[in-house]
Amino acid sequence: MEFQDVKLETKDYNLYYGDFRALKDVDIQIPRNAITAIIGPSGCGKSTFLRTFNRMNDLISGVRVDGGVFIDDHNVFAMDPVELRFCVGMVFQRPNPFPKTIFDNVAYGPRSHGVRDRAELAEIVERSLRGAVLWDEVKDDLNKSGLALSGGQQQRLCIARALAVEPDVILMDEPASALDPVATLKIEELIQQLKKEYTIVIVTHNMQQAARASDYTAFFMMDEDRAGYLVEHGPTQRMFTNPQEEMTERYITGRFG
Amino acid sequence: MSEGTARPTGMTREDVTLSRLVQLAVSQREGTPRAKVNLARRHLIQRAAFGLLWLSGIAAVAILLAVVGYVVVQGAKVVNLEFLTTPPAGGLAASDVGGMSTTVVSTIYLVFWTIVIAGPLGVLAAIYLVEYAEEVEGGTGLIPTIVSVVRFAVEILAGVPSIIFGLFGYALFVSAVSLGWSFSLRSAAVTGACLVLPVIIRASEEAIKAVPRSYREASLALGATKWQTAWKVVLPAAAPGIITGIVLSVGRVVSETAVFFVTFGGTVRAPDTVFDLSSPGRSMALHVYYLAMETRAFDKAMGTGAVLILTIILINLLINIVSRRLAAKLKGR
Image (spheres, each protein chain N blue to C red):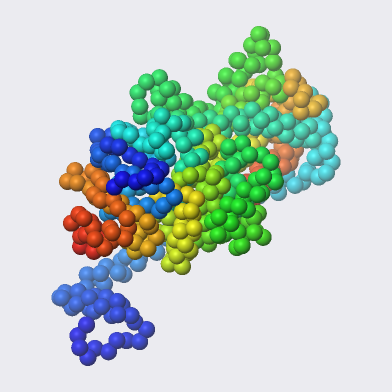
């Protein structure tokens, strides 16, 4: 589907692991300041697709791409990956705080980009932790290790850490799959708040999560050669009530996958 | 579950289903289940194996206690504050009078310089091998070739007998006229650094490899460069392992004789300061050798040996404490 205000876009995008084609001719537009969920069965390339936007696939040897990937109409493959990742933050499947204090975790990004001033860092840390709805829980323990927090808190710390760099886009790779239902709900509420300022793309295995927490849903599937492709993309409401492809309907009603 | 079967208390539905399945499986067999026939035999083998393991463990402890105990008991006869604080008297051969103070000082200077040289070099080489080189490994071309050569070299270096290092150091640093280093702290430290470099590289490499990939991904995803990731995230997380490697090398330098025999000289006088690089000296381990072989002061050799071995034990305890503390701190405890 087409959007007025496009933040991210791919055109005829293909990705290969060596000879294996993992993503096939993906054309998608992702709107600004909205939550787009990516759903699909395991192995259909959802995470690989997500990692396209901050070029994390560059780290895997043997990966080759063709086609275009754009952020605000800039080709990401023409950008410096380090610079790209200032604009495109990422939250991973398992909470992965650094074995550093809570403060140092959040300050890591800004420090890497050259912020040295202690007061400025303190301000960024507070703002980011507030943004991730973690401040009230940790404000007295900023010097405690990030690893001493609970799983849900750790994941919000990771979100705070991503916010501290002030990106435009936040990619989330099944951010709640390692968390209990209460922590999951907190993360989902948080994501709703974040969309006011950020474009969010979230990969999820959990159909209910996609249905209740996203504005748009993209459904990926794999073909006979196991290459992932985009089946359907539209407003979440419509995708879950009136999908246009039979495959989408069968997937969301749980008849396969 | 058949109708009317009461569920035993404390069992869940799954437990009942499972025990029912097991019953079924057992009842389908004729006579005694096979497992039961073997059981006595298996228990016997288990006991025998465990006994053997226990004996091996005890043997290790016994040997340690025998060696350490003997040397410490023998050495205790001469070790006292005076022995530790007086220099050995006389020259090379006549050092059977006096204490061992200068050898302690020489050993400390030697350890200092060896680690100052080999520590940073080894850690940086390990970072290179893990963080930078691994992505090109397996490929073809100049850089992958260099990388595999470096890796191979480190492995070989780790297996080279220490006297070979000594010979090398003697030829290159001590006797080479162009350098003119002669027997000196400088020659000994540089040769010692060559000796422990592979130890540090390998320990650091293992420690760096053990750092979870997720830390690196998190750092890179925040827009940090590869170097920032290696320096700010990977290295601190690998610190316990790296420190273990470095302290192990300290132990190696303290206990090494062959290398320093041919590079450090052997004069009982210690270098004046840690920066007195051109003076020769005698480490504790060398002192043990000289006392035992060149003089008849066997009791003093034992005394020095006792101090040496207690130092090594202390260093090992230190490794445990420091790396455990660091690891606990990293885990947030």
